[in-house]
Length: 84
Image 1: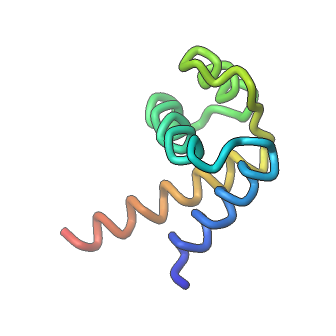
Image 2: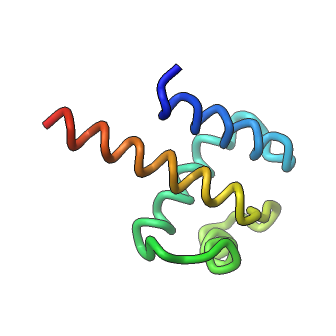
Image 3: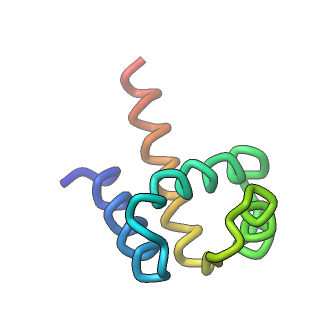
C-alpha cells in the first residue's frame, strides 16, 4: 500500500468515526482541499470555520485529522509532479 492509499484510508476511517456518512466523505475531502488550497497554513479551527461556510455544519475536524488530510494532499501533489 503506497503512502497516498495509507493517508486516504486513515482519513476516511477518521471521518467515518467522527460520524460522517460514507457517501459524503469524498465531497468533504474535496471541501477540505478547497480550504487548504486557499490557505495552506490554516489551523483546524479556521478550517472548521471555512468548512461551515461551505455548508459542513455537522462535523468538526480535530488537529490530527487536518494533518492527515494535508499529508494526503502533499503526497498526491508529489506524485503528480513526479509524473510530469
